[in-house]
Amino acid sequence: MTPHNTFSIFTVHVQPADLQYDVEGDLTLLEAAEMSRIELPSSCRNGTCRTCICRLVSGEVDYTVEWPGLSAEEKAEGYVLPCVARPRSNVVIAQPEARAT
Image 1 (cartoon, helix red, strand yellow):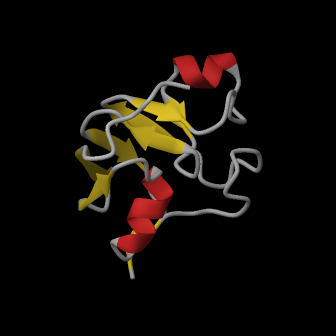
Image 2 (cartoon, one colour):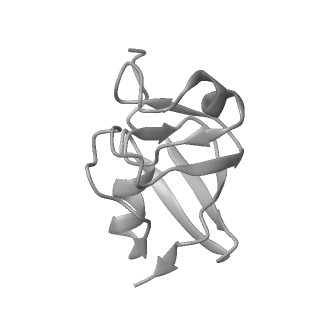
Image 3 (cartoon, one colour):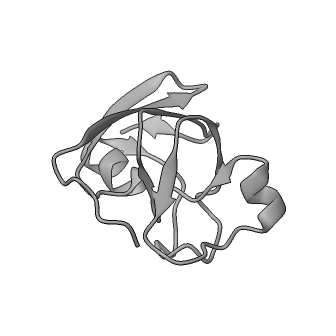
C-alpha cells in the first residue's frame, strides 16, 4: 500500500441525486458519506458483498484491500466499491440509490 497524506481533503459528487461531501485523510467514500449524512447502499464494509458497487464517473481512487470484490472487467469499466475505496482526487460517482438522511 502507498503512504497517504492524511491532510488531503477531496470532494465527492454523487449523481444523479446531486449530493456532495468531503473526504478527509484516509476515510473511505462510504465512511465519509455517512459522516456527512449521505446514505449509500452498504452491507459488509470489507469489499466482498458488492452491495455498495457504483460507477466512478471521474477521478481516482485506491483501495484499503489488496483486491476488492470486483472483476478485472468491472474495474476497467470504472466500477468501484465505496466501502473500501479512498479518493485520491476529487471524484464523481454514479449511485442511483444515494440519498441524504
